[in-house]
Figure 1 (cartoon, rainbow, N blue to C red):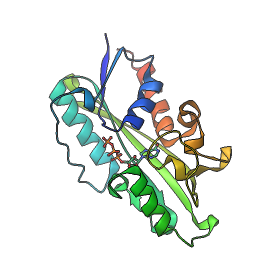
Figure 2 (spheres, rainbow, N blue to C red; figure 1 turned 135 degrees about the horizontal axis):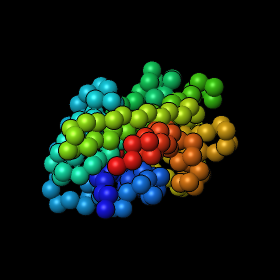
Figure 3 (cartoon, rainbow, N blue to C red; figure 1 turned 90 degrees about the horizontal axis):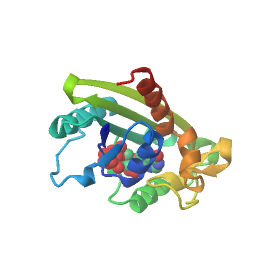
Figure 4 (cartoon, rainbow, N blue to C red; figure 1 turned 45 degrees about the horizontal axis):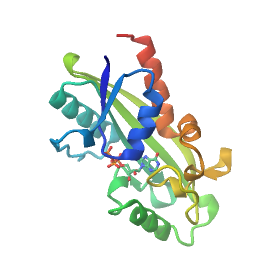
Length: 196
Ligand code: ITT
């Protein structure tokens, strides 16, 4: 039986990752499944360093193959903020969105461009090795919230190709185009190439 820890306590991320990997693993754990809370300080300004640290620390602690995700939203008009600090822009999704929209007040549509980035690290404890996968998607920050699917900044991230915000797409469609979906696609190809 092949098990994997999805090293996140963000249930939105957990569901998206599990959905894409459903055929590759038999059992999925999130950090919420363990009583022990392992503290991982995401203190680097680089996503890639944070994600490797997270996957490795959790993988070594529980002795199970682990995938971690560090992601962020980079808004052009804000000089790339909130970026790697996207989770710390407020205490709740609503607060983070409210802050983003207020900082963009008065900014016209064509200057509201943004990129969502996702870094995934897959760590194999018995080999002490990490593999990193990357995905990104460009879009725009809306003037107000749209839709009720997904999580996080989904209601304010507009995808031109679909003329919809992420939160107006089903998880399947979001996963087929999103930053995380792209990184997961690369990870799936890797898993197929390196069958256990
Ligand atoms: P973990 O560290 O436990 O995985 P987190 O929510 O703290 O969860 P990050 O440090 O990667 O995750 O922060 C990313 C922030 O960006 C956080 O506020 C997320 O809700 C948000 N985010 C990430 N991916 C997103 C997506 O696909 N859609 C909307 N918001 C997203």
